[in-house]
Image (cartoon, rainbow, N blue to C red; front, side, top):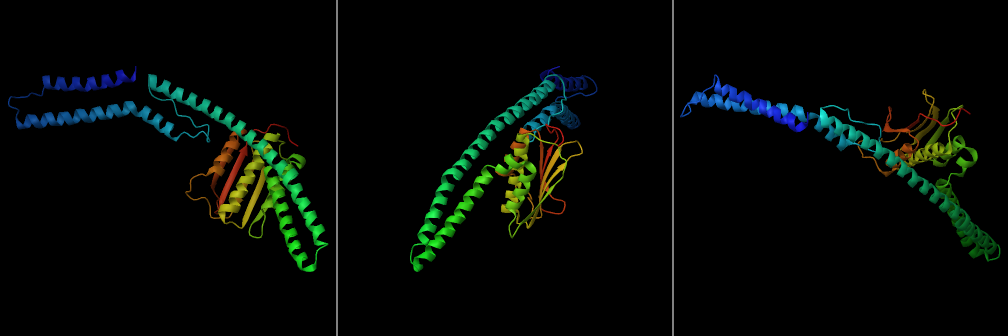
Length: 317
């Protein structure tokens, strides 16, 4: 039965009951007596209340579907509305669930293309920084050294200062290039890349401790890149926003046979702040490999970023 006929018949039933009461025990005089008026008002209130209850029950599945539509998030896939209700409400819920599945698949595919293009652009920029800017600064450094060896002593100190500034700029260019294109990931693998990443973020004010479990399942390049980028973004958030002095970077095996990544710090935590672009970017990367990303407060304070890869592509190393 359609929703239209259900509501119509519910209202019709209430009206029929009211008419039967008027034809039966309830009578109305002319003019209306006070007692009869009270009975009519009480009957009207009862009719309105019964109608409101019945309509609410009939429209409850639509309200649940509306709440599901309002709270759907394509970055947290897998949530579906329970198919309830009669006729077209159940069909509408099924159609919404199917549409949500298509949108999640299309979002994952488009995010994959965007992130692939982003990685390609990062490699190009890193290569240009290394080949163009890096070589230019190296040449400037050599020229400054050559000039410092031939100028009078009063000028030599200024040239030495210029050398140190140029050398610091060259180191910064190389550091940026390494972050844009993790060559150690391609050359030495994920384990070495994560240890190098922890070392890179370790400063006098922040200590990052890597904990890599041996004997983990081997992963394809795309999965390793996602793990590396999420670890990088998690440590970047720790260094910039958490005010932490200690952090841990874990790579471990899951009981289901997959691989887990954990970035944990002892900072101020995320509190009630909304998710920023960094966390949403991590969620998009997690979608590419069908992994689950959890960002939450740590048990002892701070923030925990967990990535669970439940379907490794290759066999155990």
